[in-house]
Amino acid sequence: MGDIVHAGAQGADFERPSGFARQMKIGDPTQITREVFAAAKQLFQKHWDRQPVRKIWVSLGGLRSDDVRQLTLFDGRERRLRLERTMDEIREQFGPAAIFFGSSLKRTSQMKVLATKIGGHYK
Image (cartoon, rainbow, N blue to C red; front, side):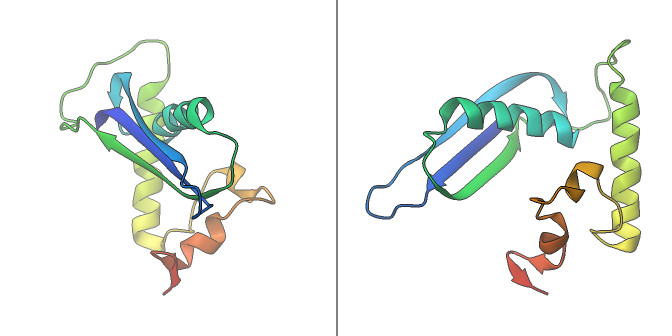
């Protein structure tokens, strides 16, 4: 798990390069996808210049073992962590498209297409 989320975007126009790369420290170290996504989304919304984007990236830094972590009483974090681990086990056994969040069924979702590719290329 980590506590530094790094997000960036590269503009689509080769003639006038644009984009950004920023990072932020989050309160508690995490490995929960939705928490990392929320921080990356916050960075993107704050720094994106509303121009077309060719490439985006997200990474997690400040990595540490998840053997010791701060427990919280009221935010359901342990439940989300168990859910993510279970989903990872299902994907490991049955493939990347075996289980996903319902939001991946939206018309604009690329999840099913990307699950059939490695590095942007068909397997």
